[in-house]
Image (cartoon, rainbow, N blue to C red):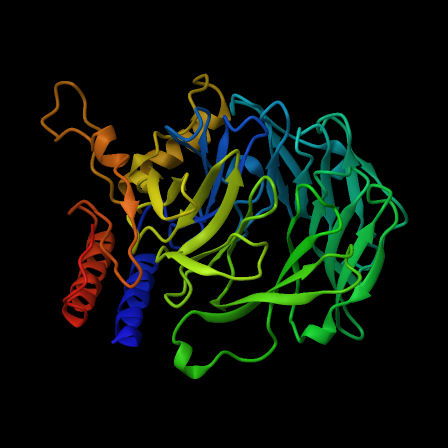
Length: 455
């Protein structure tokens, strides 16, 4: 039954992507991915498969910033991003680094990184230090860490770097020690997965192999906020998934080092790709999640020694900030694209129910390209690809939008129970079909497990 339902949802997703639309953007299924917050928590940036959902009021309302103005709209690309102490947004691209102002009405390219492939970004806890790492296979490439200690104003390359045979994947700056930097990379000829450490802010990187763990690649998930020697790494396993795991299986391991990267051991594993990892401010509590039904959202309150499933949410991204766990989710199955929880993930309050709740492009001048490009694209995308109902006006007969109370209604997920199905307007055949299949899946689960009841 699970395989059949998964197949139905997959077919529906494919039909959505294949459906004709005047504003299909890069052609990918609309989905929420990674979430980040500014140091003060007021700005929330949610990366989507079609741009960014941005909130400047702590996640109460969101607007849409399109890919084109940030320089990566030519194809399917998931950029790295971060925010500095002034809430400016930095977005990495294959040919440089874009920076959007705090009011989102202006943007520019960072001159020092022009024509560099910026593969990952990170910042210090206060946002005054911003790191970028470049990764290109071009014959003359020098892949290295770039650092800004003036809040992202200027960037400088550090060290001699590596040639094109070393392709970086992630970089992370320790919150408790500005000199400690970790990175991961894949080295070719011969192929090897590498873990790197710097004790001078990123200028000198010593590396070691992670191949003993039988992995395909590695990504720094987080550094313990209170101990720079404790670092977590997510890695895809080399072994093929179990055939019984079903569609979407991509086994991932979570490794931890408590000696500054000299040795690692596995503390968790997921059936699906481990899209989400979060760590509490004191480093004691961890969360992991994937979009695979077998995983859901799991929590450890003892630094990874033991785990418990706290929600069935199909996780696409996680972030913990000042007592709140932010969860990006599969909005087709769960009834939100972004939610937040103050009880470790057991109760999730939707912050962005669906993409029709986006309030369009940021409010800028009529001549701003944010208005002329993103504003125009949003009107087409909202009505065409997303199939949202028209925005009501005071004199219109269109039903009023969902109330704040309805949007903020908490979702408490019981293990093994899927209560929520997304809502979609009848004017959008692809979304309507997808919703019907999601409802069918829910009904089938309820028939299969009749005694279970959802709150």
